[in-house]
Amino acid sequence: GAGVSQSPRYKVAKRGQDVALRCDPISGHVSLFWYQQALGQGPEFLTYFQNEAQLDKSGLPSDRFFAERPEGSVSTLKIQRTQQEDSAVYLCASSLIRENTEAFFGQGTRLTVV
Amino acid sequence: DAKTTQPTSMDCAEGRAANLPCNHSTISGNEYVYWYRQIHSQGPQYIIHGLKNNETNEMASLIITEDRKSSTLILPHATLRDTAVYYCIVRVNTDKLIFGTGTRLQVFP
Image 1 (cartoon, helix red, strand yellow):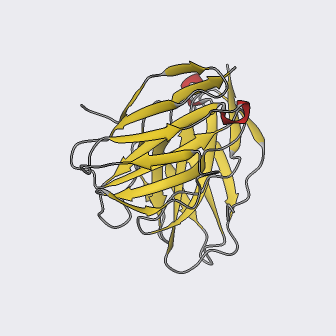
Image 2 (cartoon, helix red, strand yellow):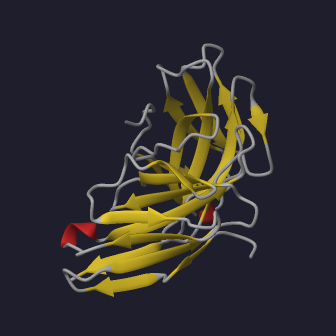
């Protein structure tokens, strides 16, 4: 596709339910980032992949959050036992590994935990 | 933590230039200045970036002071579609982008 694609666009989960959010990066993009954006706030970094390697997961808020990119392309962010404070927009971005190149963002998945 | 300081909000009349300031007094020599914007309900959109020289593209101009401690994003002829939150970010190479709270720009008719 032409851009970063995320699915679903909207997800409502009951508290305690597990969710999986998908990101299809731009073809050929080596780097992939996940961000969490709470209402009225800027995006907060969660984790970073270079191909299939997860090089930085310093932003993951708890061990309930898990991300993977097994073949170095599509990535999945999984949240186990969702809680109300997990309600946010989850953004995915991808970029080339070329020095100082821009990252392209998807539209995000809005997660609401009820 | 974000390394930049921006005004919380700004207004601009349609057709006029919008000048959005950003302070980054602790910027390192190898850090670039990036600007992104986020229109309501969309993901952030790349605008422009630079190291020390002024930069211009089809969307905007970026003016960086000689000491690199501050910069200004210029939208030369703002339109209603430019209403968005604008983020100024300093970034090393291909490292992660650290967003602050940005400047909410309101363009009015």
